[in-house]
Length: 244
Figure 1: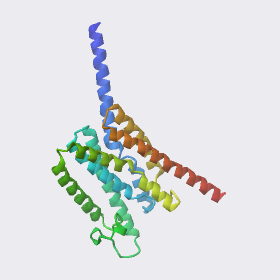
Figure 2: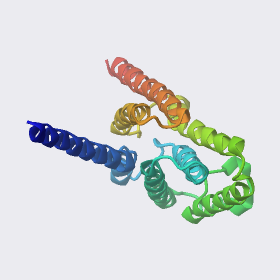
Figure 3: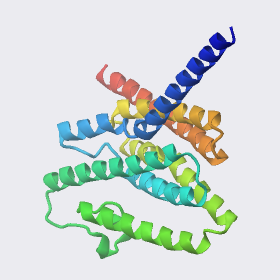
Figure 4: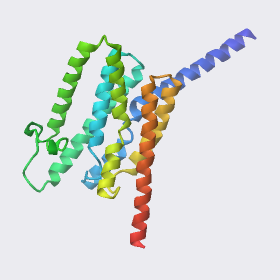
């Protein structure tokens, strides 16, 4: 009888380990999944105007900060790997947007990072400028972190900044939709996957007792996702009224 109980406990433990491993895999790669339909839409239409590249800026800063937060406060390795995957994904999105924009460009004038023109910040013509900016930001973070790593206040502030930026992930897209008075060119699938992913990861943070900054960030992201979906709903209603 005792042997049967032990076997059942081992089976349950094995099942829980498998589910935990699967959840970790979803956390690592799931964040990049919403950008697949948007990437395909831009490739197919050769138009990137509906997608806000400032989403990439927000996520690059958030995930670079999160990596340095991990150095100061080593939480789940899963979240560190997720940040690395997300950074690569954002570079892929920026590379595609730069390629499409340069192909469609009418004027020969280009805007470069070293022009130091704030009006064209994060609107540069060359993908290399985005890499250079991120490299400079990473070096700056590395130097400051090296100097202040022993300060618990600094480490917690770093974590708060990381999740604050991540919480604002959908805000550039929300503002661009408002500015364009349309959601055309934005992948609705991307936003739906954002919403599903944010609900999943917020639940994951709570269940794994991650630092409070993470689940607060997830909750804010869900609210912004819902706001963007409402924009899609109202935009489709307006379109039907105009056509009707």
